[in-house]
Image (tube, rainbow, N blue to C red; front, side, top):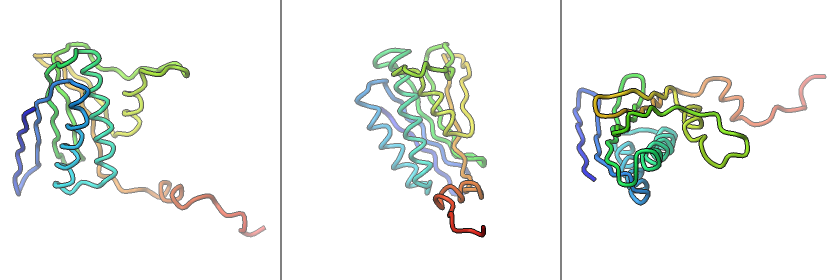
Length: 157
């Protein structure tokens, strides 16, 4: 695994890590990404979603491209949020599937899609890139209401 980070005081930061798709390496890559994002000042909630997404995308590379397949993980800060990209050599696009209710596999991309602002799969000259965007949004009023707990029964009658 090789890692390259571009940090500038005036612009967005980018981290590029060459990875091989080994299940043993996924946890290490997640830890590395978490530490990088902590250093960059990203909230715990953003780091948790990124870790989940990294696990899903790298597991898919292992499963669908091959054990030990080379890929590249990129973390890039953008004005709209944090973009996570995994480039691999397979031309087969990643598409969230609707898994059967009793299926034990096949719903990872759908779950990831529900957690992020955007999930994409696009062809590249050497395969594809699967990416997701985690925004830096703040909770809205509806989120605050859910966090407050159940409504009280002691209101006016």
